[in-house]
Length: 430
Image 1: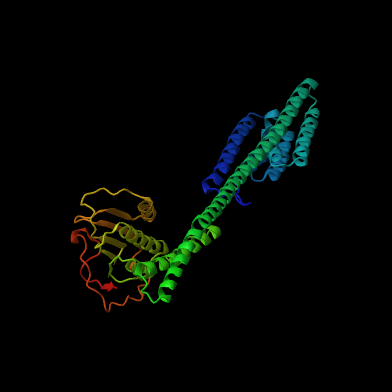
Image 2: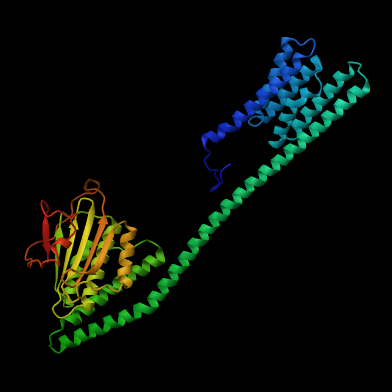
């Protein structure tokens, strides 16, 4: 019996269902051969006797599937066969097997009555033969012991089956309890992280946003020009608060990633980088189409992390370029800059690059992050996509009007080769 799950037994393989039946049929055949072999040596055995013998032994094949029917048929047929031929104790073997099966199945009264009737009928038949008392008493005592042993054996087998079933149910319950406990601990940990993030980040980001807003307001009130960096700080603070609130909602509700963090917001991301003083150009190759949510979020986060690193380490004349390629089977993202990082220098992986690599690895993609061949830093990611026919291709294309000239990439040979240069729609997004 399979382990019970949610009150329903697990599916049993068809071969396992038929295997016990084959064993029972084989046992019935063996018992029939032995009984017929013994009956051949008895005098006066007629065809009716063989029919009773074969019917009684055939009931052995049903001792497991229909124990009540088997014990009634075996007891009646073998009792009649014994009364007609007086074969001795071996004729009780089919009855003993079916009594064992009936007790094992939980029947008590029926096997007791069947065994008693068989013993009483056999004893009465032996007394009518006028045989010596010793020749009658010894076989009868032997049969009583056999029937008691069959009843005890059936009871033990029944208790053992019940114990095994209870053990399987306890194991299933323990497994379900462990899963529930793990989910409960995970939920408690999410709530703890949400509280820590709220207490440690929300207050600080709110102060930064408020102070930037006050500085912008005072500058405008005095008629002064508001510095672009100050506006970028104000906008970045608002965006950080929005994403932090979305992240806290996810941690509290366990609903997955925050909504609205995909390539459809790439323009906003680039605009914030430009307002912070970082010149950025964007190039989209291939025909944009709806992406799986996980791939869409990962691509956005890759560009966000790469531009953040460029802005953090940029010098006065550093420029960055973003290239997004929609291929037939994968999405390619390339973020380049022309900073002063020496060619061949080894980057020190931080939390951002580690998280970027974990995202891409979880999606089955590839990531390269390191110095470019001509200086600067290059981040190149390849994310697998479903076939073009699996998703609709209708997606509003970005406006290509008033686009500045695209900056050259760090190295033309370093571009993902999976995005073919010909027969693709190339759009540059300001």
